[in-house]
Image (tube, rainbow, N blue to C red; front, side):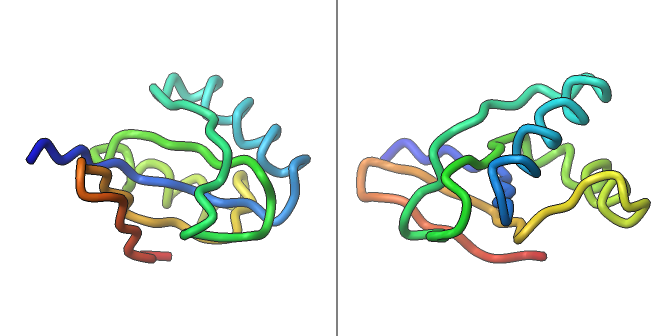
Length: 88
């Protein structure tokens, strides 16, 4: 079983997701914009997937009010399916 683990941020609106993309670019994060997995949220259709190692940096942006999110998850994918654990 090959398991991949990432951090995932969901947003309350597409506008916040697009602003999040810009903030991630400005801060040189490696990320991917993906459709929000339906097993995670039915809110905005876009989420940002990024490396777990960057969680503390992203939390700092959130606490400073620079990033408006709905939730943050640890998101794991494997051949057996996906699993999301809400962390914020």
